[in-house]
Image (cartoon, helix red, strand yellow):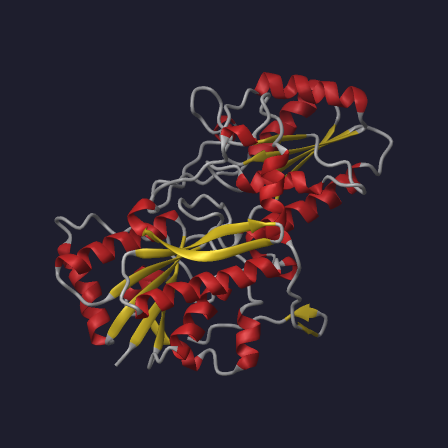
Length: 407
């Protein structure tokens, strides 16, 4: 028997199901007897919430719907596997379940924390001399994975951010009185997503006035001073700011307004309220109309504006992980390598999961302007190819049709 199993973990993206389809179709094409899905990731595996994906993806139409369906088809989790030493019973249970289902290859689609799961499982597998192969498929809108040029999911989120920012800029110019719009964008400690707001600028759009990334210390006084200067010149000011910007003492800006209580299994604080806090400061100081706009989960579930490049790369990188597993590889991640700029082209390559798990890739400092209020043309050039072309939804009764898990 050549059965495989796949799970999705962490925050979803609009193309995470293209990665799932890449695992499913490639495994089937290579002779897998069954392709199982973990419902709610490794946590669901421990609870034996397992589904035969052939009962869910029955034909070509289902495949087309799946790659157009946002969020994680199998559900997700933020479950952190404990350290191996002293917790062997957890790992023994996982391997007992995998052996019972006659699994020979395990695929996990996710980001930094998900690669931690692959690292631990592959390490334990080697310790007990298990033949099961463990492979990672990269995914995160944050684009903060090490060893890959970029991550599947990022291009589509960047496309949504750039397109929506253009619309916000147009809206801000409606009135003949000053308006300051502060857009809060995801990314936690890496500014890749917020940088995508720079793509809004073009011959038909003035672009955002300032961009603040978490790679630089955020100075509230300087922010207010620069906003005041812009208000003297413009009736509309639009500012893109990362949810994860921090002041000099290391606190997130959002913590200055609200106490952050929720912390997930990996120690990540819930970040929200940065735009609201800064918009309030501007309104208080300058007595102008302000708007705080949080893209929030919209930037990761807007499948109606998905990048075709992103869909293709998500499918291909997952397929490469399956191919590698069938060829005997384990403890690896199928990454993307940019081999050409003009024309843009990426290929897949394998990297050791130990070099990726729990490592955050930040925006290089030289890609941020010296004053820390914008990004350079090199960063814009890096992002632009990733948002090209579109994959249209399948519309039914005026709305996009999605594939729903029946479990």
